[in-house]
Image (cartoon, rainbow, N blue to C red; front, side):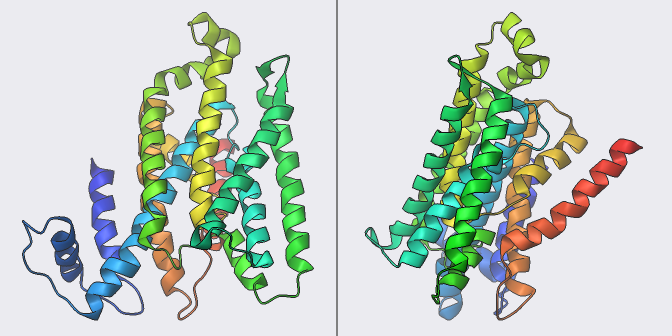
Length: 329
């Protein structure tokens, strides 16, 4: 409840921050008038209303959705694979999405109009995940170790191909492609928010309903099977839904690293490893983190923006060094 309240306040405050600063009270009245006109009958109008309602609010809202999706998936994958370093790159989805998006950006082809970029990124994510999944199955069963190794190999391959394409393309779109691979929310419109929001909310709710079964996987395959859990089917479903979420959010935000790794570990330190609490708390914390990281991306290097992935890497690296030192102690 506390995280939810802080997130709501952060959404309002973050919308008001930017090259043109807008008081939080005015932002609250504008949003209240748009969402509940029967409660807030009057609100400031003019250019500030356009900035708040059509430019910043969809961007901030999408940042919260992306952060929640990445963090929730990170918590689930770390439990499913019983690996503290598990993240979207492990299953190949993030790197596959980057390759699909870069191909469309540099080719300059838009067969589906403004939806061409997110659709190609989503297709790349699903294709890479399907390849990793096919390699990792052995004897009809999903082997976690093979999945991790296959995911690392496929991620390295797709990243190498992406880098080669970018470096050998003499085109003005190279900067756009590089910026996209590092993640960002600039240019977000309302059409970009709906589908990711529905998928992230539905998937997170489904993850929470499977939290008790996810806890059983900590005992290992034999222990979980002894409790009546269909381990292979559960693992396949959880990883598939995770790949769907990652493909969706990366398609609209680019490759944002460290959120899926950093947030679940931080929540685990504060609230313990029980997935009934870990998954929803990770989603809320990830949403809160990315909202403020995006504010930093907008303000730290005006008038240009810093890719969000750069900031999350700067925050994430010291955090993991802290974890290593804490573990030694």
